[in-house]
Amino acid sequence: MPITKGYQQLVSEAMAQVKTYAVTEVRGRLADPQVQIVDIRDVRELEREGTVPGCFNAPRGMLEFWVDPASPYYKPVFGDDAKEFILFCGAGWRSALATQALQAMGMRNVAHIDGGFTEWVKQGAPVETYEQHKARRHAKA
Image (cartoon, rainbow, N blue to C red; front, side, top):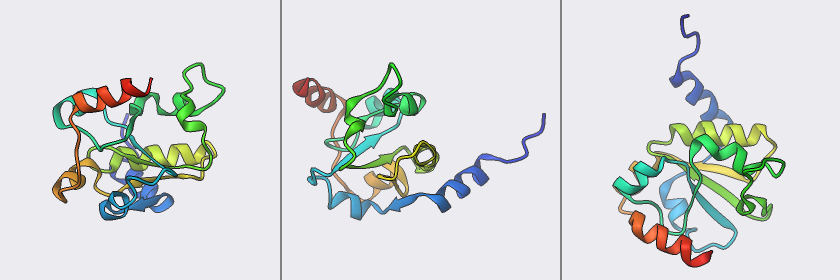
């Protein structure tokens, strides 16, 4: 079966429909209690590359299930309507598609980071190791 719409077109369409922030904009809001940064990358990527300090990890494959209060996999972190959820992935493609999907679910307080974690690192923004990320996550529990 031939592909009639490739990933590039899907990502372009998503980018036209979602709010996109530059790394500098998000970096300036890291301490903002009204912002929750969400890393949608696979845990192997976090282990290999680290992540954004203070982020919540929600793997792309589980995101819609973790966001929906009717799902048995729901995560309460997504229940705060006062927060803006800013997603990122490796290059900004998966996060654009994920942001579009969450908007389709009814979320209006969602955006993503242009260029993803690759751009984050390239611009010298802060990074925490996966071990630091796990320690912080377990300290909250």
